[in-house]
Amino acid sequence: MGLMDKKAATPSTPQATEPDMFDKVAEGKGSYSSVYPLEGIYPILRIDTLKVITTREDRVFFVADIEIIKSIVQGRPNGSCMTWMAPFDNEAARNAIKSFIAAVVACKVEAVTGADIREACGEGNPAHGRLVRLEATTIETKKTKQPFTKCQWSSLADEIQTQTDILRTEAGFL
Image (tube, rainbow, N blue to C red; front, side, top):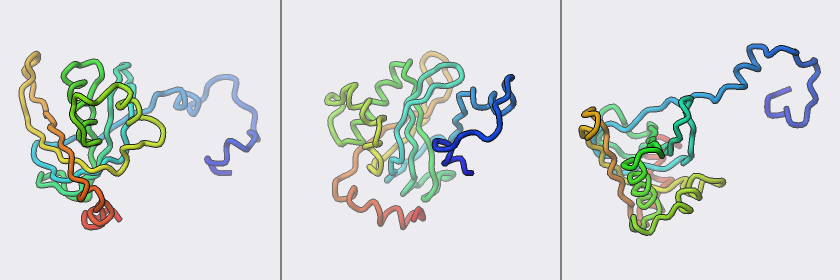
């Protein structure tokens, strides 16, 4: 019996009274590791999924899983993937999320609402397949004086949006 058949199946062995190693794994939140944007220009990126995750430290993040269609960044070649994450508990990150959604739907930043962001991360993944541009620069944070990759997202013309399958094939995805 495969894992995907578990909804219809009845366990053939009794459950252990004490949690075993598998039960302990099932109690975990899971982990999320990713490849983040490096400094540089990404002329064409394709949105795979948008979602919200909660870390083990109970921080909530907006997450964009992205396919790199065209890149001039060494270390992030065409045909590879990366993830952009922004914490909801940080004002600058919330502004960046709003700008990202505006680029994805090709609207003014001022027009983006909480409902739009909720929908983008929701069921059906409506942003899947949308193309955007990214210019990532390294800045120093004001508070901690640590290096940080600032992402400036831009929308792409409708004429480019209709070329997704061709662009993905050229990048090596299909």
